[in-house]
Image (cartoon, rainbow, N blue to C red; front, top):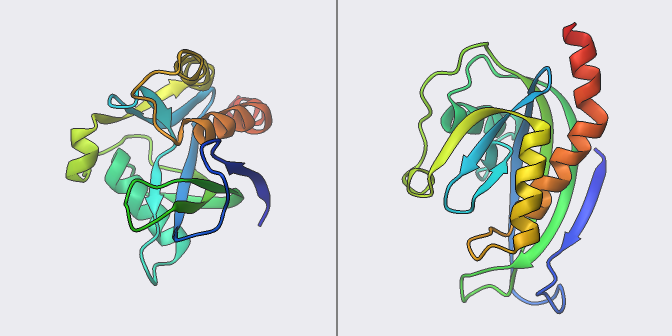
Length: 180
């Protein structure tokens, strides 16, 4: 497993204290120059589908479950572990000083057609929608949101934009060539 980046939120003054530890699995699903992403209206950003790994749950099983729930993906095939990001950021619950999130990224294939997503109520309330998006468009959009420092900007946009740029550099060209 390859560490891709360690990210420390600028508002943190240290990494000590009461830490909420989370692990997540996130999918990289490409079709030529398009990538399967979630657009979240509340934060006005694009992000890779995926989410938390439940206690005792195997990482790839969690990823398959999350892709099915959030995007309606079917026949999810996890091809390879691409790497992981260690992220430290403030946490909004008063019983914690910070959150330490480890996000594992996997290259996946899915069936050509998406079924209906089965999102959780908070995801629906946040306006999450699965979309096939040209990766350059998603990167440009997220970069503009960060440049404007929009008030609704979520804490994960830096991680997501970093990953989209890395995927664009390292995987998209190869994927387009393989697809013919």
